Amino acid sequence: MTDAEASGPLLHVVLFEPEKAGNVGNVARTCSVLGAELHLIRPFGFHLHDREFRRAVMDYLQGVTLHEYAGWSDFQAQLPDAARVFAFSTHATEYHTRAGFKRGDYLLFGPESRGLPVWLRDALPKLKLPQPGRGRSLNLSVAVGAAAFEAGRQIERW
Image 1: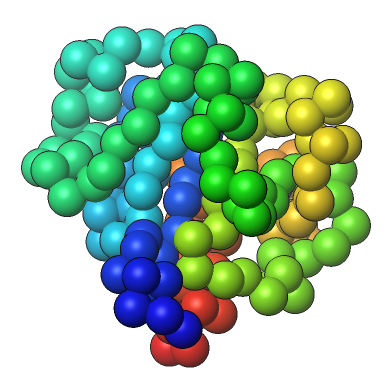
Image 2 (image 1 turned 180 degrees about the horizontal axis):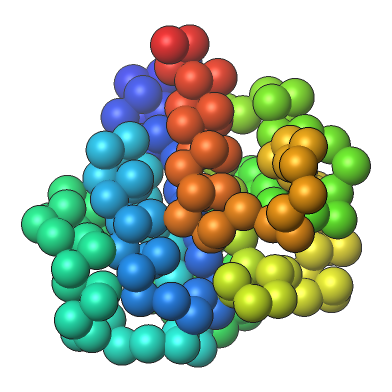
C-alpha cells in the first residue's frame, strides 16, 4: 500500500436520498468513529439543521468529512476512475462478508422507505446483510453500521 492510499479515508458511506434526520445523524457518528467520509445525495426528507439531526449527530459531525450532491449524476461525476461502489440491497444475492473490501471503497444505501431504485441497484455490484429472521429490512443506520464495520474489519484486519 502506498503512503497516499494509507492516508486516504478508510471508506466512503453514501446515502442516496435519505429521509430521516435521526438515521443520517447516527450514520455520521459511525463515519466519525471509523474515519469514513459521508456522502449525501439529494433530495433529503429533512433539513440538515433539524433538531432531530443535531440531536443524533451530537458533536460527531466535526470529525466527519461531509459531501452533499444535488443528485446521482453530480455524485457520479466526482468518483475517481477506479472507484468501487457497492450497492446494499435486500435484493442482492452476495453477502457483504464476501466482498473483499479495499480502502476507499464506497458503500451505497438507499432511502429508508423504498431502498435503492432498480435502475441504480442494477447498475452496480450488489451486497446484502444477513437477515435470517422475519423482519423486512434493517434500520438504515443499523445496516450502515454493520456494513461499515465489516468493511473496516476487512481493510484493517481487526
